[in-house]
Image 1 (spheres, rainbow, N blue to C red):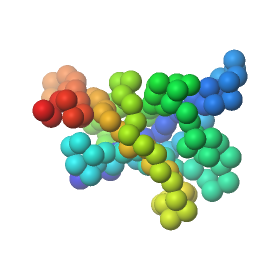
Image 2 (cartoon, rainbow, N blue to C red):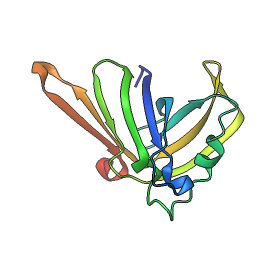
Image 3 (cartoon, one colour):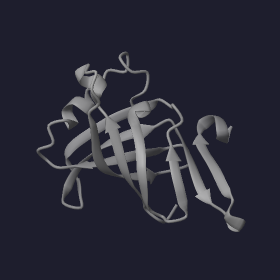
Length: 137
């Protein structure tokens, strides 16, 4: 995939603080494909963002998948991509580093197990693309 997939992402972190009230944070993100089975989210944040360390330490036993707390609020580019859905997949792992930086912000990475991309197709129909190991077997 040649074109960058840039997203506006919302993350509900209420479970991290065990609150009844919702805390939803907004982040810019990029979906990066190294191959059809190796892809990840880059989630951009300000260096002083106090929530990133908590997100990075998310304990999956409290929430079966951190991705269930993620919502793509908007696909920025490409325009023909209508929606990105994490489909209750699990994540493969997370990483961060002070060396990770772009657009004047730092970022952390969440490696994905699978994803559903919904593209606009000719005749105003939708085209669904699922990327995961099972789909490629």
